[in-house]
Length: 70
Image (tube, rainbow, N blue to C red; front, top):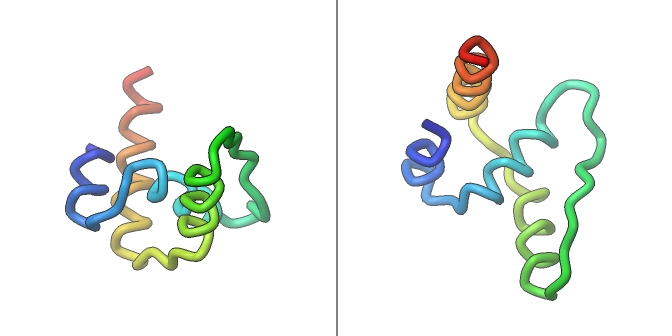
């Protein structure tokens, strides 16, 4: 589901994940490892994303479905 949402948003899944986490209430940072320059650049790019309320809701719902299944 999240992979499909990333494709629909034309974003790499990792970027979408970082952006979604940062846009959750109470979250001020994401601890993301990087060993290469391009990974740092991707994390910076993801942190600058502003996801639409609709996309945020879809991502949250996908996570809720996964939690329920577990």
